[in-house]
Amino acid sequence: MAQKKKKKGPPGNIVAQNRKARRDYTIVEDMEAGLMLTGTEVKSLRQGRGSLIDAYAADEDGELYLYNADIPKYEQAGPANHEPKRKRKLLLHRREIARLGGAVNRKGMALIPLAIYFNKRGLAKVQLALGEGKRQYDKRETEKSRDWGRQKARLMRDKG
Image (cartoon, rainbow, N blue to C red):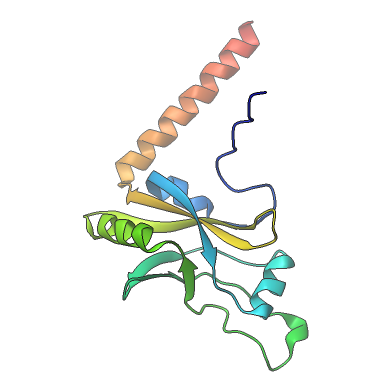
């Protein structure tokens, strides 16, 4: 019996998404990374609270960290709560970190988090993408081609 093809990308239980990332960057490669979180951060994410607006990942002393990812404070925690925008360690193999660090050092490349989600085992994961920043005219060109595709589909549907 043939095996089923594995799905690419995060599963259905996405907590936070970075919708602007696909518009502002040309995605070269994406991968899954683990997140090192405290207990209150996990509880806050399980409530569906979190934001990846202006979030990015960077290499620091041979380790990858996620910056500016906002995980709001957990209300029931009391004084033992976490800092909402602290830097969070990303869990990847050493070779992957070295490869990504080398790619980021090239001109125009960045590590962008696309989504935070819980996998089948209940572990918090980040879908990271290696992307190249788009210029304004590239964004306009992408939008024009998308609009033209919609227009063609509409014309075919109406005439057919």
